[in-house]
Length: 250
Image 1 (cartoon, one colour):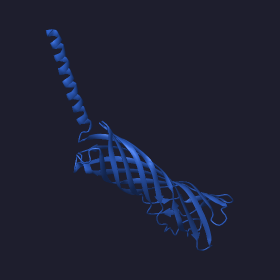
Image 2 (cartoon, rainbow, N blue to C red):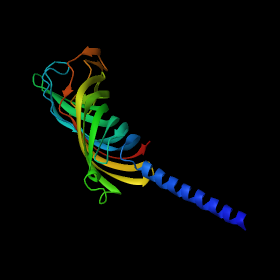
Image 3 (cartoon, rainbow, N blue to C red):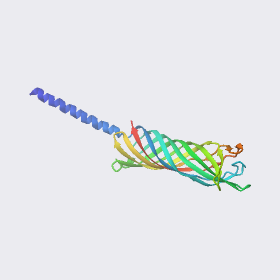
Image 4 (cartoon, rainbow, N blue to C red):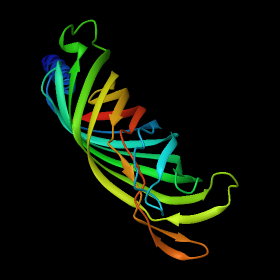
């Protein structure tokens, strides 16, 4: 009988230790600070900015108009540190893929050209976030709104650039690819939801200021071959993205 009581007592102690350990683990999983990594994906809408180039094209006097971007993909990852329920910071990489089209006119000859291209941006940023949970832990324990901002740089590329006659649609030339690095900025809002210990589902709406895009300084014409040109430039390009992702806390 005594050994039976000892056996039950041991089980009670072990059970209590397991319960305490589980509660401690749960608290640490939702700890107020620590390192995290994350992945996200979604869509973005590229809005072409100003085309004030006056030295573009084969005659070096082309001007841009009808600049149009479209929706494309957004993929990214982050690595950062949560300092408290109020704020966190991370380093992010985001890849934006879009189409960017425009038209160009040459005042001297009256010729209008239409251009299609693939536009991509590789954006690296240092970001900071402010969370509502830091102001009211009980109200925002499960769903936690936040605002964020970032600063960094972007490598913008134009590839597969095709020039055609704007009136007839006939092929004119393959324009050489262009690449340019610009400062980049981001502002965004989002919502976090704790779905498991150490795992957070996150969604965000972000606006990216990407600087500009430009072509290379040459084109290959069907009839006459290579021709040096002035690069076509598009400035003040903005992308708005919607993404969903997961963050894992260590």
